[in-house]
Length: 638
Image: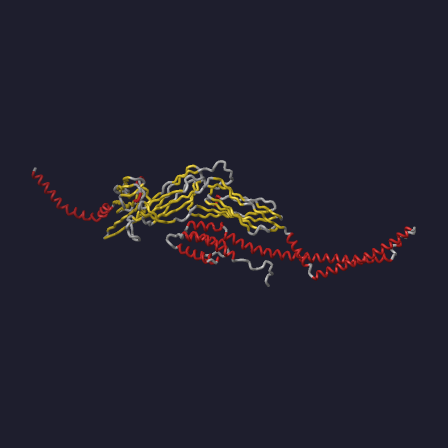
């Protein structure tokens, strides 16, 4: 038994001694083949890391995901339960060292928590590998002086009328540097929202902490009555993680989201019993009328232009009604399409509608243009009101008056010496004719008396003997001669009248041409006054000055200059003062240009208020110093 066991051991030992070298060689040959697989099995893993373990509910946290030894797609859908993934970026890196290949894929995910508390970041899957579970503590938004940035929203009225303007003011309080920032203004059903002006900046101390405040204003127009909710406006900003980090260096950042408070409006409907055909809720409505030439000395069929400006505060130009074209007896009125514009200021929208009517009087006399009425609703007092232009009377003279004046001039010309001599000769001929007829009449009368005496004696002269009497024959010859002279005089008078008519016609044309030239001079002057000095043309400049933004003021001034000088608009604000020849205005506009390049972007209050007044004064002085030196009836130069 023991001998058998001993033989088995000896055989096993001999077998191992023979097989061991062979097995060793096989293992040595397989190691190079198995090494890549073993190395790959060691490198395939997924690591995760958070930028911070504590954030507020409206701040982002960065999650870095690294996958080693594989090039697979990432699956982070499990994060959607507690986080919003706002940003995603990835990079791939492959290195080969001493024949060893190493690969790395990295994802950077920016997460914003949906709620407060200890939120779990579940495992992230890449290929067949998963990461470990992490936890982040989400705290409520900071309050009081602990806030680096926050938003406030307010309105000037909480119970407006439907379609009336509401001033919505958003203020951004900032005590941290913004690397990037943007506002997300929501779209609200049943609400029209329009930004009024560029944001303005100033400093304010809140709870002992200094903030830079950026104020932005919007005009809100609720389109339906009842409760209307304006949701919060969100600010998304990229800020440094470390407040003390040096600017312009490579810094770690985080994204913060701040939201304003929600605004609720109780919108009132149109008042019952309001008898208006057009609903125009505004703070102020004005009407202005201008004529292209004086209306107290017009002619029949003489066209002129009436311009009516409708201006309203607190409404958009689409809310302005179109003015009805009046039907006036003996006056033809033709209207152009109205031109509407809207300007924005801190106080809201200012809209203007310009209506141009061509007016042609058809008959002479005193013709009345009826009043113009625009019904509107005063949102400040809550009352219905009417803006009115009073009726205006046109004094129209007939075209015959001009001819009558020319005829009177002709009569005056006939008093010249040459004309008096011709008239004297004509009168002398007429007197000679009258004396001859008188003498013949006396002769006939004497003969008639003798004949009557003979008849009384019973001796009647026969009628056939009358033609043989010498006086009668002489009378007939004298009448024939003077009849021919009268016919010649009548023909001469007819030719004279024709000549006078032709002369009057030529003179009337010359007078009309002179009057037309005079009208053109007056029309050009009136046109400059209408374009440059009216309240309507200066309204946009006043609105921009109320806002105080230098760029807006310069833009309004250049637009005014293009309206006044359409043929050659000014290219800069200084050129406007140069054309108006106003040194005082030029000095203020140079201050305006200097202010445009300041960081604040605003003009001093005194300069802003002075610009419209100085511009109006310069326009008035320019008009007063520009009379027409040429006489109205001057002959054209050769």
